[in-house]
Length: 366
Image (cartoon, rainbow, N blue to C red; front, side, top):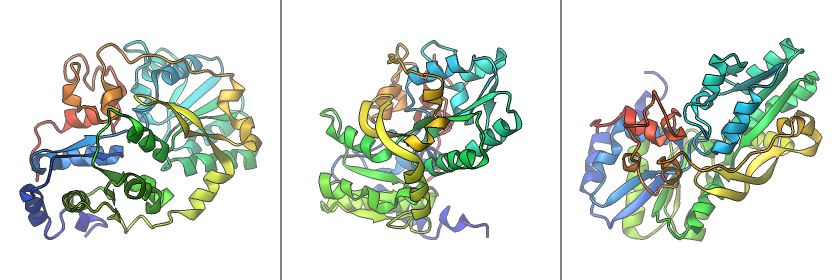
């Protein structure tokens, strides 16, 4: 049996799904804050078995989706620089800037040197092989991708690669959740916490949710059995009025997390205020390079600024990211905004709530 297969449809999952269907609980809104959870939930049809009055909303768990339009416009401008190669992950290529249809993918089609890479090390290797060009890696992500990005900067310094730089767009999960919880228009009764982030930070990073906000919190994996177990635990905690932190994903997440990865992040990165689509500016919610590694800072090397720009007209990505509505509530969803012609980033990213809702619309699995 392939590794992990036992978690996809474990013995007893049908019974667990039936128990969730039959639970009598007060109305509640739970939020998942991981793009991979968003896709897994949509694919499994989990929302269809929730008890009456219980909603599961997507939160700011897609790093591409929370990247503001002003940042995208700066990337588009940077991609047109002479003798410069811009490298990034594939999802970011199709995210539109402030003008509909303008994306890094379009810039590439028009002759810009924009490259899709699988890791920041790919960008570093390209820079080392092409010393005549400036190579910028646009690094989006949360704590999940931060260690690998930081390690690449360490490696660039070790190799002495002078034409490589990082545009650090990495963000921190906890400040975003706290910012959401401070909003007067935000109502949530529990969190499905991100397993990938927790593998780095440790499950204990989410203890503030039950202890400070009296909210149930479950760190979950991504297979059907993981999701069923996590949702059942959230519902049970909500029904009993006993919020706690539960680590369902023990096969990958420890209480303290990955200490080696944390050390690399602390060595290379420091916290800074950052701007999120839908959430605005949040103190200490982003990362930047420490002073001793600023020679690799693309923001400093190219004197970059990021304008504050509104969402495209009619687009509700900002509200969807904050859990205020679902994708189907957006008037553009499936009409002006489709995967072929996206208006907002939530329809572009493979972790976006709109992309998940579109891909798995009408699905009935559980």
